[in-house]
Length: 522
Image (cartoon, rainbow, N blue to C red; front, side):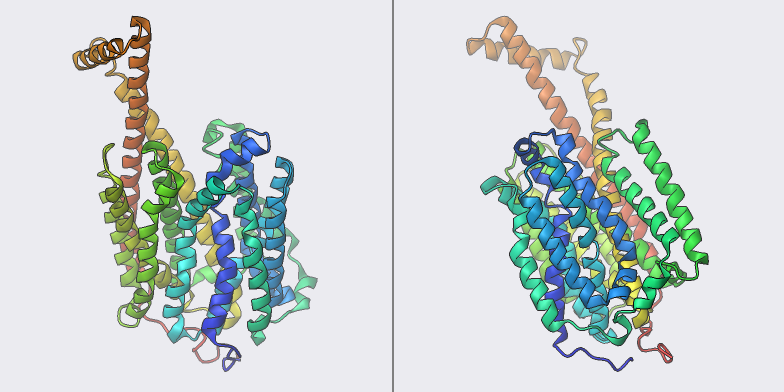
């Protein structure tokens, strides 16, 4: 079986499968900026509209860990095509939804089928590229995984502002149709990835149930936690407890089950376990930063969606340009050193970003974004190659499912932690600054009097001038406390990255891929 080679050029296969997975990566973040428009169009509150995000992430989180098992039953290519066509179909239905309940249902179905796209793409890449070429392959197709979460809010803002929120879903139709057709033409199943109907006769119902409840509840907690005030909410507490019990129960069950739906024994391999952990942290930093910077420039600096996109785009373009060079560097430098360098560079970039002030300009924000993305560019491909180096071809699907699950779960955790940090630190800074807005503070009373006099000179009455001056001071208080909260969050992110960097050195030095080891398919 080790002698199998794809009929078509591996780079053509890589382009085709990555174009399909890229749709799903975009859809994890593209909806965020359109929520106010969705709420207004469908006559709902913005809090209700957030269920369009939550429902997708919950459904996606349920399918991710079991996608390897599902593809084994029907065959990897057939499963991949089914996911592409169904994801595209429900994307169109999301764009045509006439009310919020319809949209939420279609987003659930979109998430269920979208959950199989990234693991299938990763497994196909592992099959069609020999170990010697995987570094270059992952560095190039990694553009989709790294740039997608960043491009999502920018593209979503552009389509929403210039056309309609419905186009953030309808745009998937031509891409999905072409991708589905191309996959049927160029992708083929290797012997170890062909349909095995016998797997369907040994369905691990306890494992499936525990995974669905556990990861579905966890995604619900991560996405709704900030909105519902975390553990002050009985709703969040209930689902957090359910997630903990079910995930712990799933791990115990999968270790003893005769036909487990997920092969958790893969985590006995040090490189695989450590690689999944590093990918979890990497995704948390990537998605968390992709949330922070657009929010900062739009909400606190007043940038439009288009201008915010211009702040973010140079960093994304630089990442896309650096990734191929990272692939070449892996031929000379051990991947673990590149990973350690990437986390260090990200940490320093985040600390540089934390030096922002309320009066920084466009080009400073752009430079800060570039500094962060330089570190990101050195992480995805080296982690991917090191993590999967010891998997046998038969383990590619299961390994890819767990690896992508770690990436998506890390992204959800990163977004939740970033949002919670900004909210909490804003309240702390506001309480501290508000204490100085007192008649006992000479500086404040002097500034307030000057501002009031200026407004009186513009024709305001004394009552109007006093109220307006105090209101403007309050708005300044909110803005400054929020910017200070962002600064704190960037500091936390930078310190976390610098602390994690040495972990990469615990990965093994260059190892022969399991696909090359004797007896891999004996």
